Image (tube, rainbow, N blue to C red):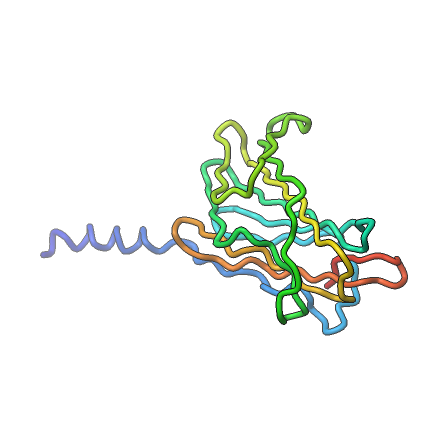
Length: 183
């Protein structure tokens, strides 16, 4: 038994990796959510990041939100759902996004070289020829929207473990006459 003790100690220590502790899962830091933000980044395990941007207005009164997933080389992430939804603040769902486009490109490649993905991927995998791979989603929420709403991307599965993604908060800013991301 004694000759296996050092081996058991090595296995026990190797299992002690860095523990993932997510940043705040809800973006709004104040009840009135009065501060404008251009973008918000949320880090997941394995160096994977989710970045949401300030919305752009659509002609019908809706908005288009940009969502970027950055995957370092040799990583994969799986969606738990194919639906991107907005909801009342911490409340009931209002609408599911229409996906306008999905682009994939290695960050080491020239910016004009992108792969257009036709359908929502179940699994995103980083390309091996680049330090990171960018998946850029253009999501449209059409029609009249409430003064304030939450946008929650689907949870992600990374190495068989499920991780929630931050709820990004948006509201209408009277001074800018536009919807914006808020904190």
